[in-house]
Length: 126
Image (cartoon, rainbow, N blue to C red; front, side):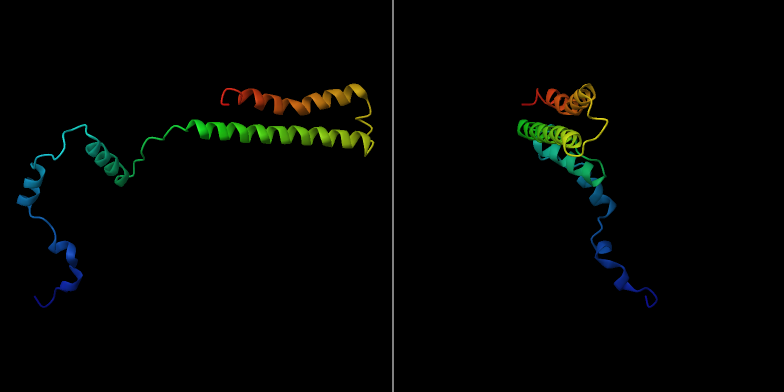
């Protein structure tokens, strides 16, 4: 016994079960009937240990509403910023391309399209 360093063996070797103890623990009766929440939680825990993720949860109504309000706010800010930049280019910087009324109207309508689209998409969530 002089050549084996016992301090490398560690406690896990001392705590290992014998084959008879493992067989007895497999045939031990269940504490809960199958299908109870305790068994389901145990399966989820085992799946997390194996690297599987639990199924994703559905967003709540409050989360959907917050997301819709956030998207609407971003859409309104973006559309208004586009309109303001077009008006500034026409009246402050005197851009030659935007001096035509029909071109200006088309640009204003196109700048409002993302805001209207995102308002329509998020209508059901409010």
